[in-house]
Amino acid sequence: MEREYRILISGGGTGGHIFPAIAIAGEIRRRHPGAEILFVGAEGRMEMERVPAAGYEIKGLPVCGFDRKNLLRNVVVLFKLLKSMRRASGILRDFRPDIAIGVGGYASGPMLKAAQKRHIPTLIQEQNSYAGVTNKLLAARADVICVAYEGMDRFFPAEKIVLTGNPVRRNLVDCQLSHVDAVKQMGLDPSRKTILVVGGSLGARTLNDSIAKGIDLIKEREDVQVVWQTGKYYDDEIRQFLAIADAGNVLQMPFITDMDVAYRAADLVVSRAGAGAISELQLLGKPAILVPSPNVAEDHQTKNAQALVAKDAALMVRDADARGTLVQTMLNTVADESRLAQLATNIGQMALRNADSRIVDEIDKILQKG
Image (cartoon, rainbow, N blue to C red):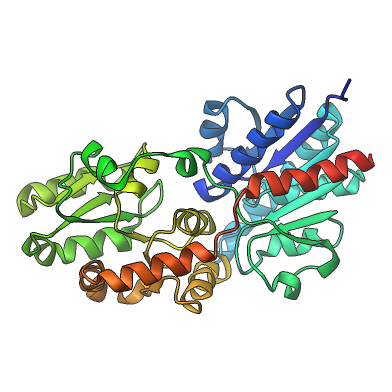
């Protein structure tokens, strides 16, 4: 009879961290039905809702990110970090995991640091093409570092690196709808080209401003329709704007629940350049225009986007330029069939499939050593 493993998964903060973590947990459950899985996230962040909704227990740490604009506020940040380290030690004492897995996000640092101090095996999953500070600090004592891009030995010990890719939501890959059926399911017109604009689960001010500024250009195009995910924070504002703009070829919603259908319906996707979003676009072979967020550590989204642009696998519009150029760029691109086909081919060739399975292969290797 197989031993019932105890596995701790830490991280979160954004869907880009949470969805891969849940995908890894799902693969662990498929292989080891008796395994006990505990998540550790940051109090007040979205993982505290999303993880229980996926059927897993989660505990929170009071950790938060450093404030680069107001250094005095970091006194509170340091206090919360010390408190989080103490709480992390208590979680390890009570749960006694066989392995601790870090997927990035505020909670991942103190949790994995505490695990390493107790000589608990650790695995890091670095999602971006430019490694974050926390993972670089944890790397020296990590057992394995799973990455999604080549050339990560400039950040991590080469002998610990395994190229696995980033796990994505399983339903995105498993969706069997045709393009036409997906368009119809969304209530759209199959005779028009569909542009999907997504700014993440919370929305993106720059993307919303850019679409709003170019609404007259969009309205003029009878061959195009836009699905616009605005984020819940901007929902009322954009609804009022569209009621006045009267753009009949724009479908706005605060959050898209059925992203598998939306992706299938899209001829072109406009997105931020988070690692999770890029992995989804690669696996689905979707032509994309990436608008990297400037409000991230070490400008890693720009580096993610540049890795695709270098292989002609996506277009990039800088955040500072988006309000002036994004709408015209996306309208020009969606009208160019050959360009769409080339982008789709190139981005699809970058996909690393079955990342959740590859990562759990590495987890199993570590568990079997124990």
